[in-house]
Length: 222
Ligand SMILES: Nc1ncnc2c1ncn2[C@@H]1O[C@H](COP(=O)(O)OP(=O)(O)OP(=O)(O)O)[C@@H](O)[C@H]1O
Ligand SMILES: [Mg+2]
Image (tube, rainbow, N blue to C red; front, side, top):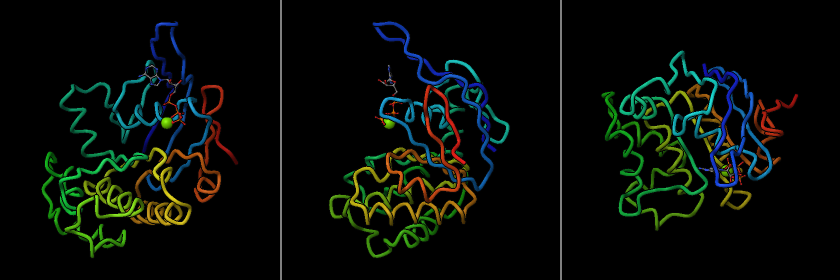
C-alpha cells in the first residue's frame, strides 16, 4: 500500500519560496491504477519524484508497504527505489549503445535479488510485442517501440509502484493508445500500483481512478 499523508512540497527560489503541493493525503492499494491531470506547472512531476523517493517532501510522509524511504540513508534509498519503483518518462531515456534486451536488463545490474532476469526480460519484451527486436538498437526502433522497451525495463525488477510521467506525450494517438493498453494490462497482471501523469483526458478516462491537481491538492474525480 502507498500512503501519502499531509504532503507538502516547496522549492526555494530567488523570488521567494514556491509552494507547489500542500496537504496532499491519498492512499493507493496494490492493483490500483490512477491517472493524474493538472495544468502545466501545477506540480505533477514534483509529486511523482517524491512518490518515487527521488526527491524529499518538504513535510508530510510517504510510505510504501509501511516503509518511509526518507528515513533511510542514501544507499538504502537507492536500494529501495531499485527494488520497489519503476519509472517511465516522456522521453524513453534508453541507452543508445545498448540493444533492446540489454536496456531492459540495466536495472538488474544493481539489484540484490537473484532471478533469471534474461528469461524475464524476454517474456516482458514478448508481452510488449518486441520479441523480434531483442538485438535492435534504440535508433532502429519507432517512438512507440522505444516506449514499450521503457515499460519492460521499468517492470523487470517487479516494482510495487510504477510511476509514469506523460509516457505517451511524444507518441501519435494510435501508438499512445497501444502503449497505454500495455501499461494497464501489465499493471493488472502484476498487481502493481500504477500512477500516470497525462495531459490527455482520453487517456485518463481509461483509468479506474482519476485525479486533478488544483490549488496544490489532488482532487479525486468520481
Ligand atoms: N528543482 C526546482 N526548483 C525550483 N522550482 C522548481 C523545481 N522543479 C520544479 N519547480 C517549479 O515547480 C512547479 C511545478 O513543476 P512540475 O514540473 O512539478 O510541474 P508539472 O505539473 O509536472 O508541469 P508540466 O505539465 O509542464 O510537466 C513549476 O512552477 C516549476 O517551475
Ligand atoms: Mg511535468
